[in-house]
Length: 217
Ligand SMILES: [Zn+2]
Image (cartoon, rainbow, N blue to C red; front, side):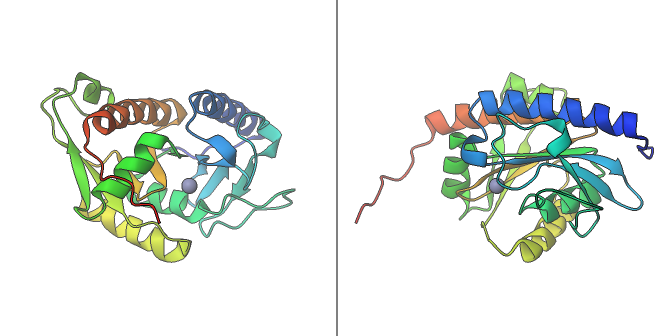
């Protein structure tokens, strides 16, 4: 992908990213400041435009996004820190060549990640909606959704993500158990489409999955 440069281009990307975030927020996928979103500005050296930490996604303005480098450090002045999970965005971009990375906290993704952690993930198959994922031509395709254990040690988690994506072809997104989804695409529109397709399918799978009964104290 070509280097993205210029203030006008950056402003346009920021506006487009905020529009996509607003749609995701309205669908209930990033409540309570949850979730984070990024778009690639430069591949070499790596620079991402990313959401700041702790901001309400319903009210995010393009000027509040910030630029980070390949180690997740802000480039230049920033009023707020980058998202705590910035290193995961960097890992996904490096491993997949993505141009945009979206991370959401939906109810279905939270439930499925927790449920399928022990098996390491689950397969999506026999759904027409799969054809919304890049390269998928038939509902019969088998699309793996890996699940990783959640962690607050983001550096170690980012290394596991890079390893997983290098070892697992055909992955369009992965879950962190009890946490949420990471998906991506060549650009903002593709990442948003993948997010919408996967969240639709997670909702479908969650409705027919017999979850373990809640074990209260
Ligand atoms: Zn998260």
